[in-house]
Length: 294
Image (tube, rainbow, N blue to C red; front, side, top):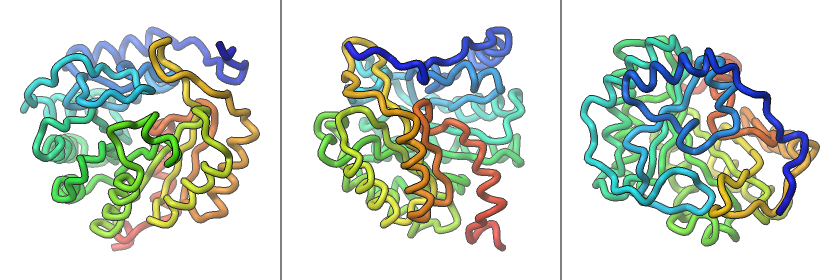
C-alpha cells in the first residue's frame, strides 16, 4: 500500500459552517458531488459556503473504477422539482458562482441535457447575478443534446478528460478519449462565448510526456481552462493509486499550460475539477469572450 504523503493532508473542516450548508442541502433534498464522490476539499468548500450540485442522481449508469458515486442503484425518473429546489439553494447560500454536475444518465434519450438547461434557467430567474458552470457527461456523443445545454448559456462548460488516452480503457471503460475532445471542440464552435474547461487526474500510471500530450490535445480544441489534480483512491475496491505526484511537478504543469495558451490553469495535488471554480469571475474580467464584449 502506498502511504499518503504529508502534502495531501487536509485541515479538519469547521463543522458548524459545514453543518449549515448540509442543513440547507438536506432541507431541499439535494445531492452534492462533494459528498457523493468523497471530495477531499469538502471542508474548505462547505466552510466557504460553496458546493458543486449533483443533479439527476445519485445513481450513475456507468461504473468507472476511480469514482465513488454509486452505480449499483437503479437510476430514478427525473424529478421535475429539482431545478427549482436547486435554484432555491443557490439563493439561500448566496452563491456568486455555482457548479452543476451530474451522474451519467445513459438511460435518458438526451443524457439529461434538458435537466441541465432547466436548472440553469431557474437559477437565472432567482439569482441572475450568479455565474454558472456545468460539468457535463459525454452524452454518448449526442451533439443535439449538447446544443440544448449550450443554448441555456452557462458561463462555463466543463467536461473532464480524466486521464491519458492509453489508460482510458482501464480508467474510463465506457468513455472515449476522442469523444471527449469532440465534445469540447463542438462546444467552442457552437458557443464561442462560453468558456470551455477540462480536467485530468494524475498518479494512475501515466507518464509526464502523456500528460503533455493531453494538454496539447486540449489546446488543439481551444480549451480555455485546465485543472490537474492527484487521484486519490476512495476505497480499497477502487482503482489503486500508482504514485503520488510531488507539488513541484504540478507547478511545472501549470507553467507548461500557461505557455501553451490556456487562459487559466489550476494544478495542485488537491485540485479537483470544481475546486476554486469561482475564479472564473477573474477570468471573465481579464479575458472576456464574445459574449462579454458585447
